[in-house]
Image 1 (cartoon, helix red, strand yellow):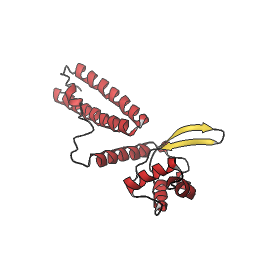
Image 2 (cartoon, helix red, strand yellow):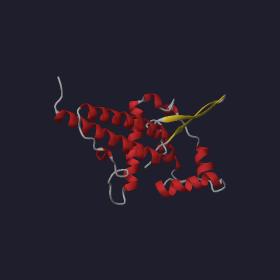
Image 3 (cartoon, one colour):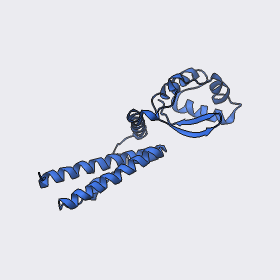
Image 4 (spheres, one colour):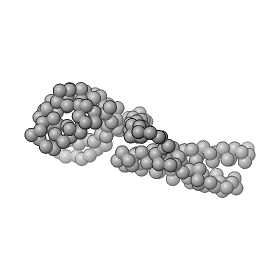
Length: 183
């Protein structure tokens, strides 16, 4: 059975939408520094565009690449741009973990964080490297020496929700990296 011109154009529209969606993911991932997700999105964009070209040629349709354009991250207005961007990144990362459970941090449900990392490093003015990070936690999220336990709990909970990537391996074990978003 052959498709009608209308059916071919509907298939074009679906591919254009898929390309725009992947471009949004690629842009957001690039801003978040998530190179793996950005490359996955770029690969999908190329596949969708190739399918678009095949359909356009096969059905003798006119290609309108302008329909695949995205304007920045999305047309979100107001001062909540940063919040919206972070929520989108958060959703993408969690979805990525749901779709690929192999990206989970091994043993995340048994993970611990030593008290000294918070009290003697992060919120200790005598440790300039750690203290600078502690000041940032306080100014952005309100965590400080008085409520460091809540920060630890939030980090350990987030460890179960976000994908992890191998940072390095040594005879002592594997070092993982997780990019998490805390509220």
